[in-house]
Amino acid sequence: MDKKTLAIYDSDPEFVFRFMEFARTKGFLAMEIRAFTSEEHLCAFAESRVPELLLVTADVLTEQVKKIPAKNRVILLEDQSGETFGDPGLYKYQSPEELLKKAAALCRNDRETGSSIHKGRTEMIGVYSPVGRTRKTSFAIALGQILAEDRSVLYLNLETFAGFEQLFAEKYERTLSDLLYFGKQQEATLSEPLSSIIRSIGRLDYVPPVLCPEDLQSVKEEEWLELLARLGGETGYEVLLLDLGEAVQGLTSLVAACDRVYMPVRSDPVSLAKLDQFFWLLGELQGKEAEGRIRKLKIPFVQISKRGREFFQELLWSEMGEFVRKLLTEEKEANL
Image (cartoon, rainbow, N blue to C red; front, side):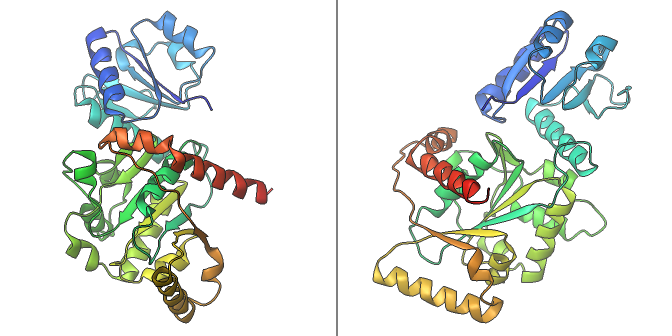
């Protein structure tokens, strides 16, 4: 599959270079980054490749550039009160990271109002197991990355100790704790605060997990269900991917709310006993229908020594990635 393209056009080569280098080295988007300081070169490129996202400074937005059929176009403004010609606008002189986040959020908002591809119901996919050491999170992240090749996916890790700061070797200013706070503010939509929280692994968007377990444990079942409903209805994501942990209140309700659930398992006697207990409880609280949406999986062992974003790139093309691609292909063929 061809990569989607982000094109940026500005007459200032230094600005374009800094933006392009950030996007590439940070791995913020799994898009091919194309930078242009010439209208002629941009238009020639667009004849063969339609950009998924075109960022263009207002003073070089000519009639010819307006004719480029980019799926999403964002105007970069040197003056915050400048003219955007009917397109979304962003202030040019902010960090490349903020520009990318806000541009992505604007594109998602377009999806909400029907001006983009996604117009259907959000699918909710769960990954959960009552059994430990099943490589559940590695599977969930590989699944999210591969699903995000074709669809817009938001990954939520609902574990008490996800370890993402340590794994990514970076600090998070905002996390799921902040999203939970904003979710309780009924008068506001979630799109704008979410755009300041989300990070990306390639094309996969994710909310950094909580740093304090109490922030997760204190959330009531109905609050989780309301938050997920709002994320599905207000943000334009096609898939919500939940990596569920034991500390979540209303765990069986969240499992039952998912359209499908992948459950990594092990075959030793203790693990089988834990599975039996979970399915008994699920049946008692949610009925037998919920069990029918769960698919048990034996996840391959993969050993990756790297940390940071290199871990996730290697994971994607490891035996785990092959396992997920085969799984999704089999499911697609079975549904034909």
